[in-house]
Length: 505
Image 1 (tube, rainbow, N blue to C red):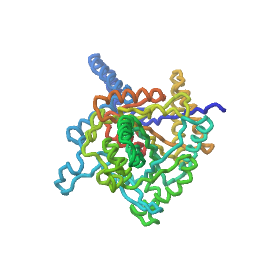
Image 2: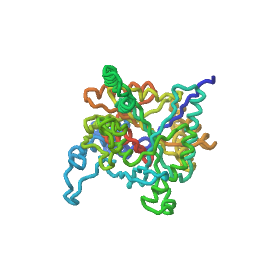
Image 3: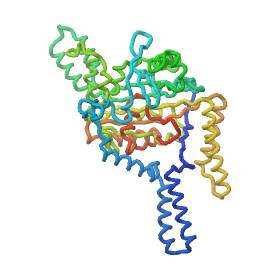
Image 4: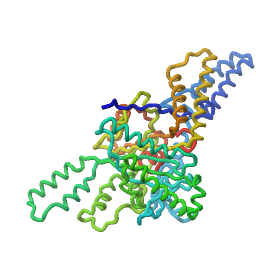
């Protein structure tokens, strides 16, 4: 057996108005420099006693970092959150509970926050069924979601692990073309306590009429105790089509939402063979009601049991339509706190992966993040944006230029180069060589959410999540002041979470 292959080379995007400084940070530095020059111009020690401490404070605010964010970024987050709280924009009530608009007389959309602009459309899937499409009119995107199964990596030998990882890389590389209609891919996985509906349905179908009453009673007791203790995983693949990149194709297919849905369906059919090659089996492309169900069960964990009973058609649920009406996908009520998000009797905390492993890791390094937990639901979204060759060349050239300029500046000022800086330069050069040899370049982010139905268990669940992330070599950052946005990215399979431009998340 060959040695297991290891992986590394993730490179964090660096964005700023100048270097690593944001616009407000650059303004703070400029004001600090002006304050330092003021005593010199005035030739006054009294002015120096006032200006120098203020300048040092401004420089500390500009260059200081807490949990990866500068002081001006923390202030901006806090001000935005407090404004939302003062205007009660952090509280959401769904249509049945919300007051009607005085201007239009209509009630607001069912989904809260940034998701309020989404529309769940239906389109023929070309096979006689209906496909659910999440349309974002602001971003101009159309997203289809598939429930998929994957043979996994943990219980196979290293050769099969490497082959499966390579097949996924080959799938991603097919989208790294100029003007690819698919602008984003997202893999979403949930780990949640099993509701036991499938077990109860199978048992009800296989118990014979002449079964001893004592045996039936004992079996019911076992299922009542063991069923809820089990856990299950759901995996979804989201494919997002850009309307701006496929303008001509959409026009040729009839234009508007109908044409865009037709183009998306055509791309999904073309994607089928590539998914099979990557060892992904599509269980189903979600219908509008199926897509709404994945959203609803994330907001309301207690709805999972009822919906599973309806899907399994267990006694008492016969004839109930599967899924959820798209108009009822959102929560009845939600509230965004500084560090938590409350929705329909549950609480969620969302984290963004701030730093990927710097050391060599195996293909299974993410396994600890989705360990089964009886007291919490976990979900993780990996969002990928494939880059075309031209843009990839530009982005990597920028990275090399920035690092080379910083390197020459350090040499001129006589500062020693750290090992981290040498590693970043070598990494940028290695990535550019790989791109020139035909490899694809993708932007990616990962968002993780942990949900509990008992507030007292929330901090314990968060501590377990952070410990498992540390075991995987990841550094997490709690999305302070943006938990509602984080929930949309980490707890829902809608392909949210990666900005279009190279800016902070």
